[in-house]
Length: 194
Image 1 (spheres, helix red, strand yellow):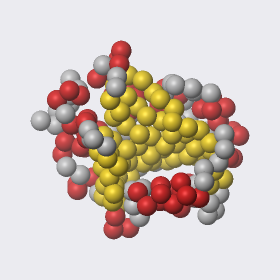
Image 2: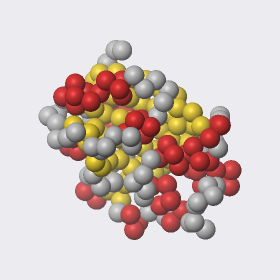
Image 3: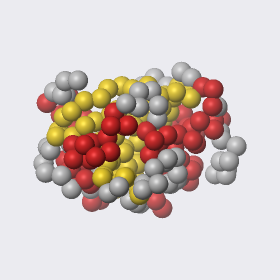
C-alpha cells in the first residue's frame, strides 16, 4: 500500500498523545475506573472478547510502509523517520468501536518475525503475540491525549503503549481506549473497579 502523506503525519502529530517528560501519566494519576483496562499486561483481545464473544471483531483500517513518528523512533531506538511497517485496526463489539490500535514494526523485525503478522487479516494481533513462547513485554506507558479524538458518541482520551519482543525482535503497540468501556453496556464480569 502507499505510504502516508506528510499532511497526514502532521495531523497525527498534532493529535497524538504526548509520551515524553511531564506529559506522561503515571499509573497513580489515572482514574480508578480506567486502570481496569489500562493496567493489564495480558491479552486485551481476550478481555474484549469476554464482554461478548459473538460480537467481537477486528477491522483493519490500513497497513502500510512509512516513517515512524518521533516518539515511536524513541521507544524502538530507531533513527529519525526510519521506515517501518504500520498496522492500524479498530477493535469492536458489534457496532461499537472500543479500541483503536496501532502496531509499528521496524523493517528488521518485519524480516525476522513479521510474516505471520502481515497476514493476520481481521484477526487480532494479540491472538498471535500471546501464543509466542519467546514473547517479552516492556513496562506499559500511559498517556492522556492532549487533544482527545471524539465523535458524537464517545471519545478516546486514554492511551497506553508498550514494546514487545519476539525472539529479540521489537515491535511497538499503541492502544487508545473509548469512553464507552466505562458504560454499563460493557461492564465485564471480572471487573472489580466498583
